Picture (cartoon, helix red, strand yellow):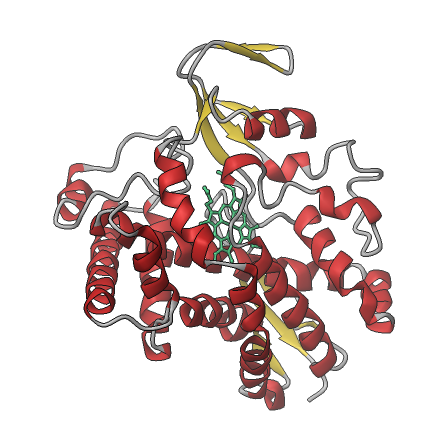
Length: 366
Ligand code: HEM
């Protein structure tokens, strides 16, 4: 596999979706899953193509109804609910003086956001979290087969859940995103294709934001001068979020396959060559001045490639930005003298393309 690391080369790949196919964008160059896992997956419906893992014209067909209903207005309307959810979550642990902020805040907040948009009842959210996280882990080939069989069962359960939810809305429409998607797609998409959309939104829309919350807090605590600046000047919240995404990119990289022989960065790539497009590396390239410095006032931070570019650019970027712009300043505001809870307070997760922490134990003056 070739790993594309320079900013300009990453951009070139992302913009040329004809030469660089996304058909297997989430799959690494690993062996197909073992037969035990495939047998379980066969009990559900085919999982691909999704938005992330499709090329034109399929991709355009899948993305069109999502763009029609996942509008800036729908995201903006979520603002008051997100602020309320942020405060409710902080209320649940603020008096303790310490918490694992990933468990108590980083996971639930983005799930509430995407769950509310989709129209999923809040009581189903923990289950959706487990299912989608296990779907992600299914592509981690280092886990033992028995575990991967369990993950596959969860993926099939998730497919059935969304098929039932969509059928319910087809019979009795509401004003949520799932009903909107059904109306927007008309007869364009089959029900199996439709089930992949909320699944794709849930998985893409929560793990990444969870990672950004943990990565952001740890980066700020590692750089007390920067933390001090954002505490003193709330107008820096937007650039701080962009800098966190640039500096500690939650989606480190995804994959592409070469469809016709080409040259990239002076390297000949044959048909079928597998690439990892390394957004994280591009964001630390010399394209950014003093790229390894964490600077919450950096003007150029929003040129980062954390959300990708081109036809597959992140459709949830406005929602992710809104969540982070609300959540991070509020945590800093409400948890005075925030600090890591001593040595061993953080533990990284091993999913190689979703960079971030499994656990971040923090303490504050309650
Ligand atoms: C900080 C948070 C996030 C990061 C870093 C992130 C990153 C990315 C990146 C890099 C891509 C491009 C993938 C590629 O080129 O193959 C992408 C695509 C996508 N993202 Fe995000 N994302 C975030 C949040 C979200 C949210 C909140 C949602 C939805 C609620 C979402 C939904 C999607 C979807 C559906 C795609 C596929 C778009 C397509 O292929 O047309 N993401 N994201």
